[in-house]
Image (cartoon, rainbow, N blue to C red; front, side):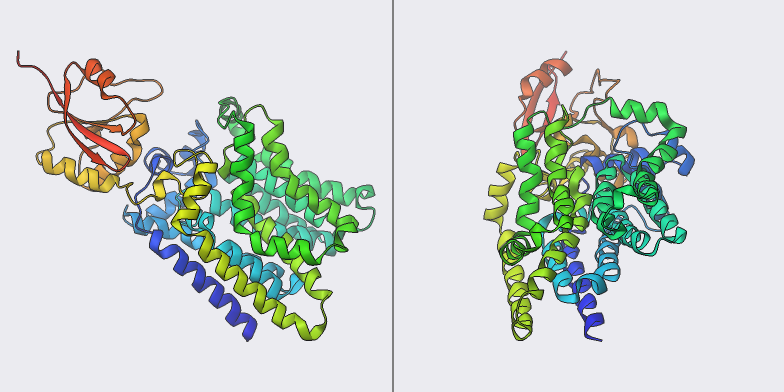
Length: 469
């Protein structure tokens, strides 16, 4: 009964962490996902339109069906990722509570749930939290397949691998971590068994099966080379959120589990911690830091295992007191790590609001409000006879989505695309720029002056004024 109450409290706490963020405006990638891909007529059309990695296919298909159930309102749309976040936390608890113990797993899960990355991706219309859910289920299936040697467990492992790589191809990293985690359960000399290698190759096979029908488009996305070129800063942006999120269970595990680190399984699982750093440093273009968020469920399980071994070496009478102390320290650290001052420092270390994926990205700032700007634009042009141009840095997709929500026609908001540029604008058109952009080139481009600047946080709204003929 107490263990059931524990997961209820954990999920209730997770919901409370996510609820304040449900109403925030959609940012660039989210609005692009909704307007460019999720509105397509069916799953086949979504698969065929894999032209950029923003189309995270399995996530887009599920979002497409969710949008058929709810109106396109920010809060209602964000309930979908919130449900996947709760499912990911619940899946980890259901799959590993007996294996790792309620206290160790509860402490590690609490650290994740209280973190800002959980709040960001638990309400984001992107496939990262859904990926974390698939990885959580894949971890459980991997352990069962290793211990029971049943083809039914292998089949479930294959299903979760298929859905994970179909959401984001780089989820192969999380599945590789699951293979390393489960490897000791195959036996002392697991590498000599054909069953293990059959199991280990399944993620790569599922990747091939999923993307083979759209192979040219998949290869085209791979050739885009999106990511970070500064490997040092990328490494900081990837490792810092892991250290901040799991600081308490990580330090406690290191403090009390020195003997455990001599065991063979510690070597294998240590490779999981090095995985993200290796990928960042090896590839010529480091993946975006958010690519590694689906690894967080693996970190939860690893640290829960460390806490379990640590509690086992304590005298039985001291274990409950130690567990409560660790839990309270996790709560205190979670509160401290979410303070604005701390988040600002971490965000700057991670590249600033424009590049930060985990602490204080610009979409989480209170000043980011495309809906407010859209409302002001439509007040200035109630007949909707003009045009609004938004520069790339001013987040044009978010602006378009906000205007569409308020009944503006799709052609009302225009912006440059990869294959087309806006050539002309009518007199008195409104132009939205990033606050750091120089308005002079845009004034020269559209043949007029940009007047009446109004600042809205990171964006500035101008009006184009042409000299009288």
